Length: 338
Ligand code: PEP
Ligand code: MN
Image (cartoon, rainbow, N blue to C red):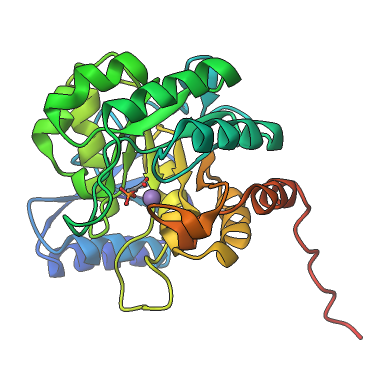
């Protein structure tokens, strides 16, 4: 860790930092430049105590010398990456919306959804063919039949498709049909899957695991980049907390944090992130406000009949409303004077 002192740091402030670095278990190494002083904390100690020095008097910044992740890090590549999915750039100027049903259920269900979400401004189509379900008795997806339905809907609407791959065995087959491969939250640390996807010639949508730290999430992305696949989009989809009113707790700070730490595009999933139709509009706006490069939203022609995730799926009218709400201005700051 490096503590950069500010230009006008006093000798007493520098001495204090040296002392605190020792207390935290590190050896301080001081470099005095003409403009400013840098104090390196060398060895191993209590890292958080050094991080906290960012708010000590006379300190400009505290920077780790190295992150455990490298290729995904902005220290290695400061400029933001844009991932191109069949002509749709994710991570550029515009917010990209991916929409579609949780599961592909029939050609009519998928095509009508694809047409509706396209009309409302979505630029990619989602739909699960292989579903990771908590219970083995729940609908598991239509498999290859769903892949064909996805491809047909894609051809008819021009929307590229993203679908989940759960197993290394399915990668080649799914790659024949899909434009982007999703790694589901439950598979974020399936290292065999990540290693094989690193050699697949398809962009990957990497969901954050429900119990994964941002660092673990970025290290999962590091598997993909270090194995040769630079086209990775991160997706925050909510984590497990003590809250029971929402299905997961969507961590919007992690969207901003991941974009600070990494050059990769980051999108948010308000559907799995909340589990509630009524919260999708608000959370989508919030995600865009914190800098999300896109959203992935579940849409179904008739959510009450959906074979999976109906309670969090929007019908076409509600999705249209969410899309319109995305470009409404935020409220102004109230002037506190009466
Ligand atoms: C999904 O996208 O339908 C899904 C199962 O997502 P997650 O892996 O985030 O639960
Ligand atoms: Mn779902």
